[in-house]
Amino acid sequence: MARWELRPAGSVGPGTRPTYDRVAVPGAETTAPLRIRPFEDGDDAICERVLRALPEWFGIESALVQYVADASAHATWIATGTAKEGPLDVGFITVRRHFPQSAEINCLAVRPEFHRTGVGRALTTVVEDRLARSGVSFLQVKTLGPTRIDEHYARTRRFYEAMGFLPLEEFAELWPGNPALQLVKRLAPVAPPTERRA
Ligand SMILES: CC(C)(COP(=O)(O)OP(=O)(O)OC[C@H]1O[C@@H](n2cnc3c(N)ncnc32)[C@H](O)[C@@H]1OP(=O)(O)O)[C@@H](O)C(=O)NCCC(=O)NCCS
Image (cartoon, rainbow, N blue to C red; front, top):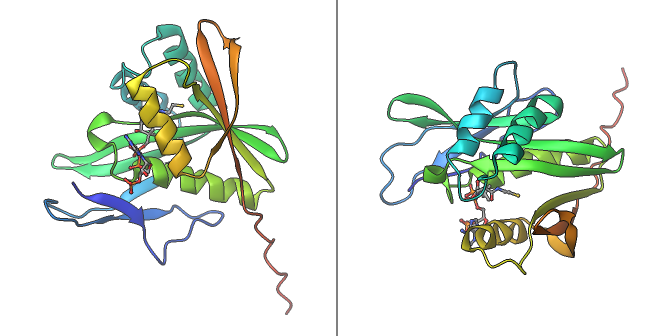
């Protein structure tokens, strides 16, 4: 399976649309870029398709509908890869800004056939970079806690840990019937660009 990784010269600065190169590894048939772009009108249908492809994670209908609504209401990024048939929207991430210094990954989802190809890392990296540049120091995410045995969410927690998130607290009552694990990551501060002088 090919993987996507940030192109060395790739920029994720303001106004740019970062591109990830698909890195050829043994068994990969083609190489094609992964594009990460901001949500546009009508993209809620893309988010819904991705979520419906993941019933082991998003099997509660009311929660799924809320995540789709959240995608239009909060900052969302869409990842588009390339399949044999052409461009394919493979995942998205939605972020909520709670305070000037803190934000939360509200929803992150990648189509199952593209798991473990670097899409989740690419989406998270783009968001972390944007947030750090706009003054955010702490990024949190909540997911199913380890006291509920679930092999799918165990993978999710391994992903967040690989991305540098640390478990902070598990809440028994926050979500009805499900333990919520809060993970947090300190974002590296990004110095503002130095002023150009004529
Ligand atoms: C969680 C999710 C977004 C991760 O996206 P992804 O594209 O599969 O993950 P990546 O390929 O970018 O993985 C980055 C790193 O995370 C870790 N990781 C990811 N999946 C893992 C797994 N199943 N087991 C162990 N480590 C894993 C690895 O260290 C990986 O790096 P490596 O492949 O170089 O070893 C994706 O699997 C997904 O959509 N899952 C279902 C929905 C979900 O859990 N959403 C979050 C709800 S809070």
